[in-house]
Image (cartoon, rainbow, N blue to C red; front, side, top):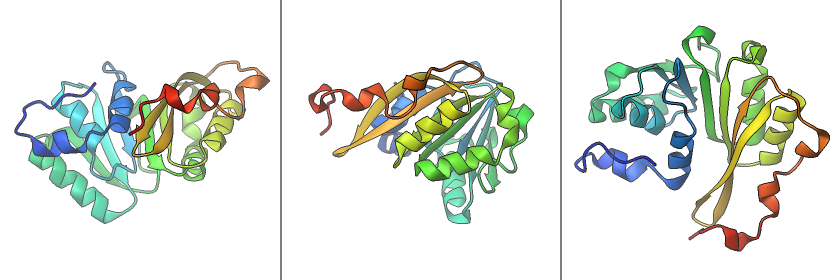
Length: 196
């Protein structure tokens, strides 16, 4: 799990929720590069940069405000020179050869699927997808299965009283029909999760 580099870095201590810690743990440390789509405050790229990730780090957002906040947060953490900031819609300005891990987290499942559909280069099978829909997790799961991605890891994070699904997928792979639809985690008893 993520630990701040030094206890004086208030921004990093304050921003890494359980959900973000799970996402952080799902990103390989020996990768070519990672893009955080819809980065908002760039918590994940900053955490990776401050903990020795050597690959390329890209933070993208469609809106100028979040991207400015992301850059300010990276400056505050002393890693603004390690992160490339892109103002763009989804993956449209991302160079496929710069990355091998795509993180799309904190947006609706329909939006995640649209972003993936618009980047036809990711169907080559070279990319790890780390996806965390805030709504319609079943739509994301269906998209992964329909496009022949292997769902390598599934997890549930809790924020407040809300359950949030996370998926890590790789392509190519073969999945049987029962893999589509709801995650098996959906049917576990609520008491299985510590959700304050």
